[in-house]
Image 1 (cartoon, rainbow over the protein chains, first blue to last red):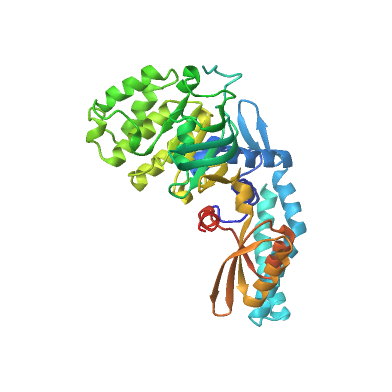
Image 2: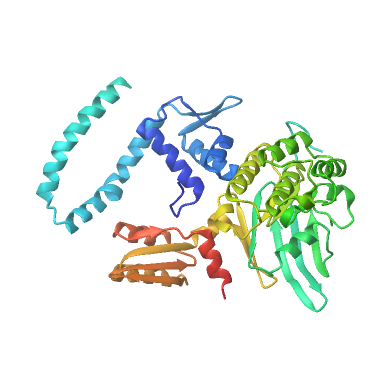
Length: 131
Length: 302
């Protein structure tokens, strides 16, 4: 699971952010304890605790004394808005480079995006209305 | 020794300064300065014969330093009974009395170590599949190692050292050992020093890495910091060389180079500039980690 160059705690934090964005973890959901995390992923418990501390300081998770650690209210929206800012540079630019290598022109790309994006957004819109 | 709830002692810290140990005319360790913080899992690495076992033996009072000082929890461990009750070294193949039954050997440890948890020891021995009515001398090497691991964990010593304790253990047993170590460390934080050649297996467990080379200290630092000094760059040759050149100012070393047709992979070690690595990634290069084991090989194979 841990394949990046970043410290393992950052990769754990990123995995939890991903679970919140995908909806696998919702607002108010309890996350595993650092001990459970450490046992499950076979890492040092201090590393798991560091990941949790990072997410708590970002306001993504909140610790409730004696109860456990929970996903903060508003965490999904907070993550989405910060992701939007880096989306084009981090995700779209590499895609454009790949398309260029394959000889896929801007027109083809635009046409594809318009058709698939409208399918995808109708699906997520209903999701968000339910939330 | 341990109070429940507040003010739990979280293991012993270790301070070593200017340590030298000699066997006759052979110098095993020279000029070693080392600080290991309490309550953490430390990895001790080094090639064969570089002084790892000697270092751990000094901490366990099995040897005395010729020069320099070794302090555990701020005190010299040699002939310090109270301190030694809470310092536990398990060497390869178990380090247990061989000619009584394993159950009797556990009885002996239980008397010698006030923090020993017999119930936990029995549970561990069972999960390792050990028959405690057998004498350790009649056990296989792997079983003796598992018995050693059992004693090391159940002793709950404030400073617990495992020196190549995995030797002879098969892969499932080693995995069980690591799992138990994580679980028990989470519940009872204390100081561990783990020496092993199976670097990739202990990498996720250790918070710091100490490397000995030819009887001297090569480095001792946070595992994350060490990993951050390694990077692999993979992509078209020209782009890879350009990205590597961008790091040159910082004095990195190219420690590996592989070419596959027009694709080049360079492994760099040094103080890397994250910003230019990010740029390289945006330009389409694969920027990957270097496993601790590869860094270790680079640092010690010379």
